[in-house]
Image (cartoon, rainbow, N blue to C red):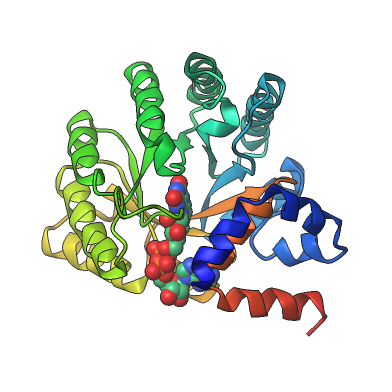
Length: 303
Ligand SMILES: Cc1cc2nc3c(=O)[nH]c(=O)nc-3n(C[C@H](O)[C@H](O)[C@H](O)COP(=O)(O)OP(=O)(O)OC[C@H]3O[C@@H](n4cnc5c(N)ncnc54)[C@H](O)[C@@H]3O)c2cc1C
């Protein structure tokens, strides 16, 4: 119930305007967001690198409806790629296609993405396309397929709560496409997504096996030790190399567990968001674990 409410609030622009004016609001988001600028984000990324973590940088932003704003986001990603290169940071980038104009025009979005992927290719870097709500699944995949035909340094995300994901993964494995597997962060109806957590989890394990058995470059994105343990058990039983996959977790979530896995020799990448558009991202993290609300309220009041 609280999860649904928080997810509903994550889409409320009017509430966002009020929250942006609260003095402590930005500070509350600080646990999950690296900073407002790419410079701040890179400094955090470098610190994480020094501690053995790979990073993927995400410039926060989505649902862009103005061409100029989408072009600005594309330019910021280009700048970010150049800075990553200059600082020799071990970090890729993650982006959302609605941030690059998917809701404006598919070709326009494709061109924006292509430019970023081309530049990343020249710099030896990699671009991950985050997956958004189910209204965008098909178009996101179509844009990805078009770019993947030309460049191999681009990957996609699949969500285990969607019924369609098994078919999508079968096709992606066939193509040898890099896939990040997650459970899914949006409020989806029963017509397209499993509603029972046990079914989402069971599908996660099924899809994880399809990816690893099919030899796809795989990212296991989860903080759930049952998903991680199932992965480790599967790779150990089937003699799959530790370099065939990496674990990915969000910045600020289960930090002790992140450390433990790196200490055990696993490849771990931290998803590190930055930028002023932190509201929806922050609210989705609250929805995943409402206990975090207590944490941020305490932090805001200096406890
Ligand atoms: C690297 C990465 C990239 C992602 N990319 C996408 C994407 O492109 N599209 C998309 O829809 N979703 C994405 N997600 C979000 C994902 O879909 C889930 O919503 C989120 O990861 C929670 O699911 P879980 O697998 O961690 O398991 P859950 O069953 O939700 O959680 C398992 C346990 O992890 C801990 N935990 C989980 N979340 C939190 C939290 N916020 N704070 C504190 N503890 C927590 C709790 O102890 C919980 O019991 C991404 C997640 C990660 C880690």
